[in-house]
Length: 226
Image (cartoon, rainbow, N blue to C red; front, side, top):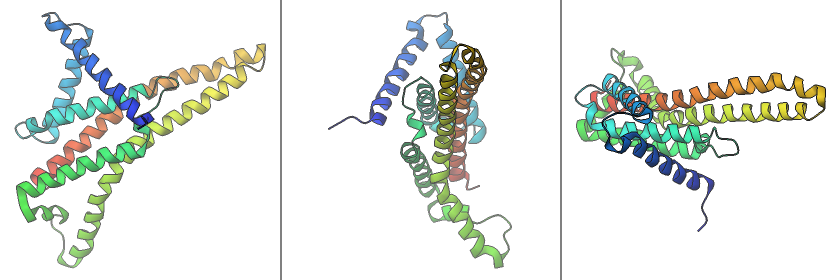
């Protein structure tokens, strides 16, 4: 049985997450190091998202899952920024599997708590009776689309950024290897590549955060039916 690129990089992601966790504990020392401070900042940010999106009491139960999901996506996004590496979150098959699992879990959670009343989530508040069948159908399609949109948003943003970086890098390389004068002209697109790489680092964090915000929102919908 061969190991695919996704399988390899998911293994690397798990290893990196474990190492970062060990570094963040600072060997149980009282004085925090930079890794501990970074870990606490991320922890507080995700906890704030869960509390605000779900609620302070119910959200605590789902915080470990949402926090682990954020770390998983973030590390995969950052690994993809390493030159000649593999961006697993740019592949829709992986992000779709994650989003499908999230939506399916939220749906099961909703049925466990509300039973058949969970279908009331598909009925907009104050809906006129004549428009009810059409609006319920639209809401149902919109609910099913969550399986695709959640993962597609992540994969499309990561893939588009990497493709643009690849194109710009090739363009800058061709210019800089064309001659002595062109080498200095190539510094202009090279500077743009460096700036865009910094932007991509920010996008890696933002996309992981957007994913867990929407995940928390879906869980809230399942719990509160709105």
